Length: 441
Image 1 (cartoon, rainbow, N blue to C red):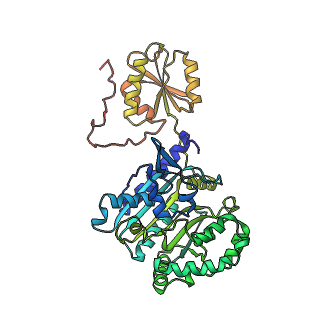
Image 2: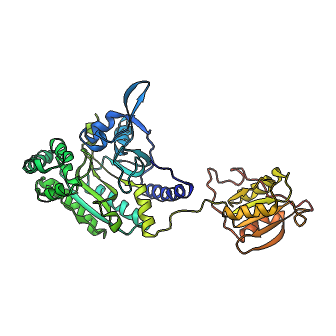
Image 3: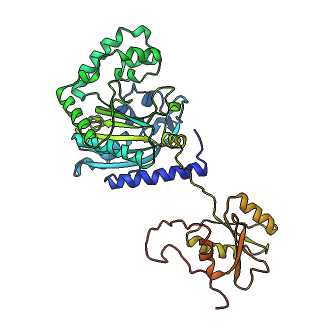
């Protein structure tokens, strides 16, 4: 696990704002589920043989009682909430977006951590191929919005639940011939979820998998028609894709369409595919969790992966978190006056920090520069008396004595104001106070 230091957290926040704003434009409002869930939520949905549910899930013990787990993925908790709150009885489809931390005890690999962040979309109640297309188009557009270009879309169909028996039987028959050559993980998958052998990273396993029957040749005509509608839709929208006959997903609940957006930068392709986002259709998920037979399709994207891929590509994503303005004083005992000076500047939209120390003014100025400030507003000197202050540009190394009433305008000539989030739009409702008046007026 790792810390997100302020600059990195600010970059994550920028990605958050772009992602959730796009989700709302598509009609996918945000849902927030608990970090912990009943362990069965994941065992019943993902499958007990999946690595995420079986080997990687962090279990929590409460008062000596097991059965709770830290959330390893987002789809199953959203499906649980959809059922628990009776949303399956409301007009369908029902759409959700999320942006949450996830937890997996996975082996350390490039761009993988045991606490990581995911964004996601879930659509319950739409069986039409157009819903698959929309989810893929959303993701393609989001990656374009944030500037990621070193990425490739891979799609496949693994068939619905009625085709799955035929698919599994054909694959088990094929891979059983090579049982002795498969590594331990793939042997286990042969007994459980055979499709997931295509995810094995061992070179010999991948070589064996390359000769396996193509899944799309084993699925039903209805499945193939659904997939054809999806690919036709992508072509009409001008979205480039590659059909990958070996592309599967890591959870048992997936049906029909599966897809991944894969990083193509050589730094990220040395150990196999690294996905920045992936998803597909999961028409049987709600039923396996005790609900009705409801269609579903969704996507999840790795925020950490996206962040570092953008950094590698040279996209400016980190945002300075330093205060642009520092309030200083030559009077060592006027802490409240410094705050009185800083507050209206903050209300006007500037990032302002205060040096409360009793150090010399030169030391305070030196500290402001080290903290990345661009402007210093100085009081408590001979020049800054009688309702005046000094506004010093720490970059241009120039300064001007100005009246208190004009400080906002003067500071604005040197640094930008930042938009202030509001709950209420009326002036004064968010705590504004009028700027200090000039005592001579």
